[in-house]
Image (cartoon, rainbow, N blue to C red; front, side, top):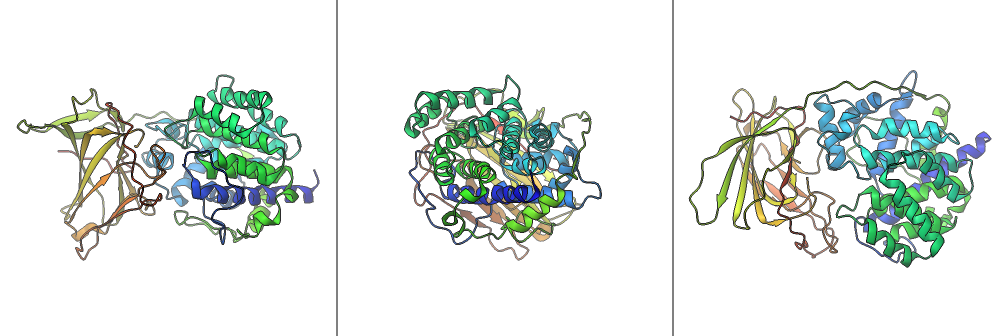
Length: 520
């Protein structure tokens, strides 16, 4: 492939990804089917998206190396230096790295987001650095994905990187998909899902038919689950028959993690035929490279054109470096617990030790009138800004108290599990330094003794049922002792959470970054 054609395809990749991601962002996580044919609403610029953010970090980090090479260790360092996302697998990965748990264990240890889309969405860079070399692109992707994923979540990035690499030289979409399949293990659940879609498409190549089959077999309570989203990407590619607008619309109209599915399909179509994107898709979003505020400490290119030039300058210079993983010993997490039963006298607290930070309560609660209270205490080394993030599959009430420092400030976290409404799939209690701003922020607590109380009904980005709403809980503690500000954002307007998903099992995840809990 000549250099000019290669440059066009690299730029097409990022323009297509930006268009597909922007199309899907307003309905991210909403159950389909949708009937979008264009942006709704029509944007005034490209929206920031972690799909692109992290790949900008990787590219800039590689460019800063005297001898650029991809390895899980090098990418892990870039995570810690430049990425402040605290949600889901990102937060778990950062916690593990700060606890000196190295890849690939950082992606698997105490991580129930292993099947999320967080790795799949950052595959394009590796394809652009290894055009027409699916094996090398897959190897790059593996080093990246294992930092914060395992299992299907890891192999989804490998699949897409190999497919996207093939798209540089292979014009047939079905062969592109088959190349991706060849890069993942024969026993991967992704093989079944992608193979099913190919077979169903051959049986009846219609959107509604494929939608029904995919959702019946693969829909998950977690809209970011790759086991439903990779079949959706495959369906979008096949149904679109090489036409850019039709392909990204089909992918987004399936619902689920549709900013990611739209972005992945858009990237592949942009590689296959950069001229086919069309000005109608590009004019509303422009070419400015817009990053999320959680990305810090890098001198990023200002436009997608400049970003593409940076990647082109790296192609052929980037090596592969594999590092043997060192074993680690999981650190136990200690807490005090109390069971409260309606109509009965209170019981004394008792100590409990969890074998790891992903903790399963040993027995179901008896009934809706029984509450479990867990108390964690932390000592933090210095004044500053911290994040406390708690997630669980149960509806909970969280109480955070910050005490004036003696030798060091203390944070007391009490968690009350309201067992009447045990919801699906919410995890972590996380203590992270700086930059992370997506959960509960405790700012400059040297002289703070205020108490904040809030209900966290689910994690950021989780949507239950068909209501499509989203909740963020945020409280800020300030030196002036002003009352804590608590904000609940409902992305779905006035719609409220669906509490039909009731589960008696309690699954608790406690995330503690760099700071060991001290429970007395």
